[in-house]
Length: 152
Image 1 (cartoon, rainbow, N blue to C red):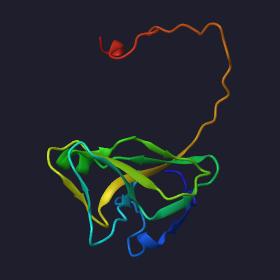
Image 2 (cartoon, one colour):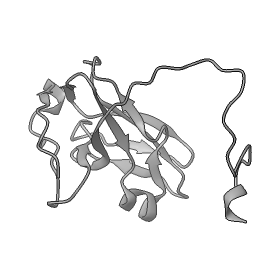
Image 3 (cartoon, one colour):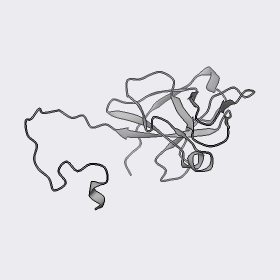
């Protein structure tokens, strides 16, 4: 396992009182993100509806890193609720609030309550590439085979 990367985090006023993201096991890749909606008014996600859910958090990633916002498997399997733009990307120079775009693919309304674990955030290194224009690419056995072509 690589050494920890220091990431500064700030809790916004509407996120005060909520736990900071944390790993729930020694080998967990993702930090749980919590919903920072008002205690007295959960956000109700109707079937087919999407909403940007606030977390009450801002972070300062070091250059060369990104944060990926990913679904929680339990919400998806039990309720059909998932992250719509998965994975969502938080760039190292973004300093706004982390929001989670949830969608309800389930058959019944889903209440997003304050403190609910709604997504997980994975911090990852970013590899920058230099694109080299070319008129021809090297051939491979797969070639231009697309969706499902390697399963034959």
